[in-house]
Length: 116
Image (cartoon, rainbow, N blue to C red):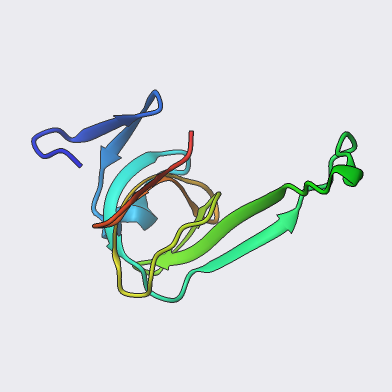
């Protein structure tokens, strides 16, 4: 995340730099950029998608994958596989919803994950 600006632009959205401790006080729908630490082991889940146009004889199965994790005690979700460990630092861009922080971009020291 860039220093000197109080916002980051990603995928045509403006994410405002925020301390993760201020998250509970933010309004729902706010796009934020923050840094935090993974509190517990993330849970990666997958579910076969059921689509009427899927042809089963080809042997292809499409899966919906998402990762649920706690970042500084905040329930968060990333739609895709997010390979992070407990205690790892994350830089995140996300949107506050009623019950979770939806992560659009997550950055560790080694890799960047992003959804468009």
